[in-house]
Amino acid sequence: MEEYVSLATLAQTDAKTPIPKDKLLPVISSPPFLALPGTFNARDLGLVPGSPIRPGLVYRSGGFFMCPVLPEEAKTYLSQTLGVKKVFDLRSVREQARAPDPSFGQGIEGVWEKPDEEDAHVDLSEFVEGEGEKGYITMYMDVLKIYQGAIKKVLQWVRDGEGAPFLFHCTAGRDRTGVMAGILLTLAGADPNTIALDWTLTRIGSEPAREELIAFALKGSFAEDTEAPGFDNLVNLRVSCWEAFIEAAQEKYGGLEGYVTGTLGFSDEDVARIKDNLVLRN
Image (cartoon, rainbow, N blue to C red; front, side, top):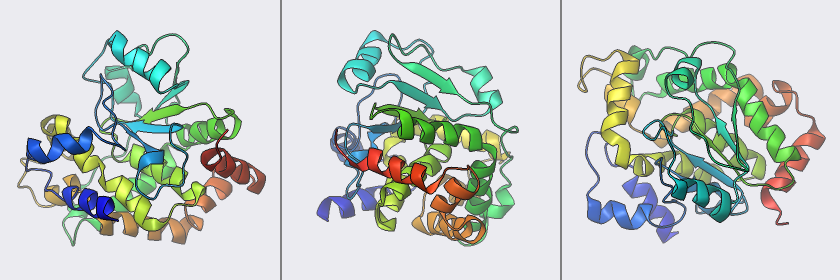
């Protein structure tokens, strides 16, 4: 419980304010975070406090856009230390074309499923009221719509991959990656607080790339500067926004599991197998 509170508190640091190194380094050097060369915001989804997912199976991270050629130490870490067999890229057509994933080395397959449409435009005006709940609902419901193919590929791997470890990422490892992680944690039976905590941990994990991601958010939202109305809500991760998305998903799909069965077409037997594969040790 103490670890949960400590992580949750640090994760509420304003995104425009650097996290002091004396507070940051001990945290990102410890589970659930991973020191994966070539990217940032990497962590083991099974080591998030309260997670029912077995450790050493599901990894999430930010993109590899700052490292077009992955160093050998990163390839070795992925393949031998983590045992990763698949890396799923959850990015848009434009992002993937601009900075394709690097080669991950022998034995690791990179998977990118072309989205149904180009990534949705962020309307900053939707983030002005409250803590930005309306904007997050729109953004994350778009993720469920646009990235159905990629989400389905990940779930098929969990169902059929015979327990082989895998990693998934987008650009910041925040929004699309956060939704994917939320789906996996939900299917594994995690409680809502655990799922929300994992989502907010990106604030900590993305600190090494904070300035680049702020610039990315400015460009993507067409904000004139960081003081633009709604920008503060866009770049910060507040639990109320995740909860608002979950409520919207419940209303439209019957929850994230309902999305998996009703929209993606997985059977109840598929879902049961996915859950077993996420939580049972081989």
